[in-house]
Length: 409
Image 1 (spheres, rainbow, N blue to C red):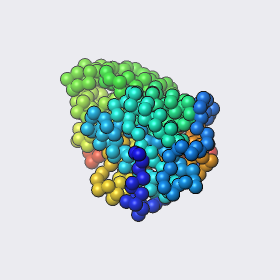
Image 2 (cartoon, helix red, strand yellow; image 1 turned 90 degrees about the vertical axis):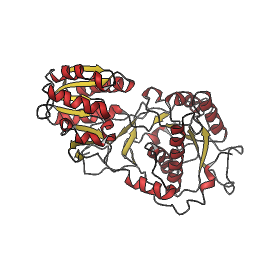
Image 3 (spheres, rainbow, N blue to C red; image 1 turned 60 degrees about the horizontal axis):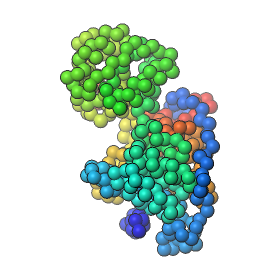
Image 4 (cartoon, rainbow, N blue to C red; image 1 turned 180 degrees about the horizontal axis):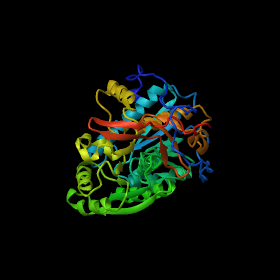
């Protein structure tokens, strides 16, 4: 039976405190100004899992207790080798969180997402039949869309990793980093520092669609003015004309929803057309955090972008490397956060502890990459820093908040 119990002896030495805890107000660091969270009623379950059953899975020695049964759905047999490697790394991070929690009553039960679709639906049915009272995963949006209704019918929440906002809600919660909040954070910071005329350059991609809409919403929220929005084909040869148009738009801040080589082509083009860094502030998202070469492009120095606090995950990376002898995959921290959150809430009544009210605590939780909390629509809001690009790399100009409480609250 595909249960992660085989690692119990291998990691008995790893028994540190739970690395995720309900956040309490602290005086340092002003947070963004989030909306008030009103916790909705939980989705109505037609066939709820509301009590322990003899048929549910137990390990030897758990016969007299009710385990915290956690179903994990990941693409272990995906046709993509990198995806399989990511799934394996995320599973190891989930195991690490379980042992860090020190709760021997947590039982991780695995099922395969495969390439999604029917395979993911079968995985959900398998885990629910084994008594899972919370599901961690799946990874991809189409899989979440088929797993969530099955879990909702049993009253079981889904803590998924997709970045497709449309699959969130009604019992499905996304732990992923959504670009909408990065856009809101950097636009808000720019407005607070005197920028009011905004333009944007966004690629003709799904990411560009999402960030363009987030950009217009964020500018409206700070009562700024959108003076131009230009789209471009996602290649370096296609950016000249759109960048030139934005440079001549009169904007005092230009948001660029692009990273990598294309970003490094956009910067000089804007500068040559008059949008120099002493006149126009360039703004970006966490995509900028993935390319050290950006710091060497002089036209991008002084730009601002929103991302998790630098090196926030050092402790997690160190523990993972010590346990498994290698560095974790980039998204593995999400699996760690999911299982650590389950461990935090595991003291409640079995089959009544992972409620919407508990998961949507407005104070949020402290995860590997900083604080986060779930919104009404099932997306997660994260505490992000604003960084400025310098010749030696990014530096923090606005720290990530350590609480979702407003200053003075």
